[in-house]
Image 1 (cartoon, helix red, strand yellow):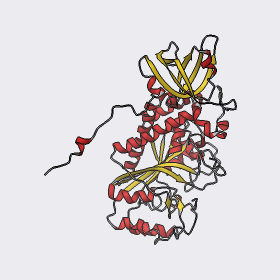
Image 2: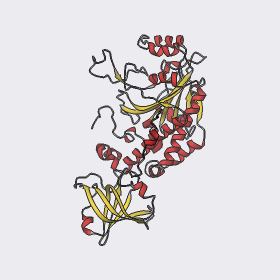
Image 3: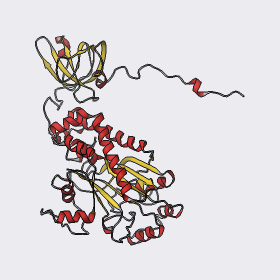
Image 4: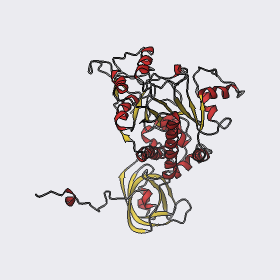
Length: 458
């Protein structure tokens, strides 16, 4: 019987997919002739005999210096213009980079008029936010995007290395995972014949897949209708959420979370060291030292009860009370992770059950639940997680106490009814992770096109 061999029909082209190489790639190559590059003009400096320009295509922080000895061509260059350049890639005598381009031919792909708002000077972050459509053409904006890519890549590499399966949870949902009511309603309201919202978390849906696949994660946007105007809140942001079956101790979950943050941090430092160094120079001069410390030393672990005791003995005056049973506020979280206290990332575990959602597993003491928050220096809370309540009767009782309609969540209860397994999970706020990696202090600076209360431009 004849068998058609698909493998024998596969052909692989060795032809480059793109006509030009990125500047990042060219800076790593040897001198050569007949090189073509494309990008945007960052700056132009004209002298009597020669003109110098910096060209950037987004692939690297510094771009590449190009040299033109043709005054006519040089006159066609303007800051912001999009150009194609051909010439010789040669060794640069300068200290900034090892290669430069001696231009033979220039083609202007897109002209730029004199109203272009970006010039060769430092612009404030607030100003750049008003021209968000051009923000990624400046050093800070482009560095954020490269590091954001590397951080997402690092998170997913960790999950892949640990044999997690990526699952896609819905953005439209009929449930409010956190129970806070801060959800966006979807219109028209009669389309689904019931109230539907934009998701605040993929956790409950991820638990469905974890009960059959073991280890799963989801990475995508979530939405919260908080009218908070603080530097830590957005209406639309990204979360990496993991759910893990067959773990039965909170410390196991802390081990996974710690490794996830450390390995992602290391990945970003390996892939984007120039960008991290840029933020260390211009934004936070302790950034590199802080990131390295988080890689070299284990994270601190303390219970909520121990944290309250530390806050009470700190002799510091806090705006909010530090009594057992009260929520930890940003000022408390920042102190615990600060140099005054722990000086590195801190896990706070086992919060009072009244402070946490229904799905967290009750501890034997009857007062607390098996959960944690990971607090980072200068940031506060980055990760929240818990062991999930896997006992049917206890979960049903907690839902009733919370005033939930158990019929609406019968599918969630069924997961405990049909082959329940001990499991836990956590969620990483991606924009807050970016604050940690860049040293910036406002989440609006680390998302490409931010949305917050009263602001949904573009």
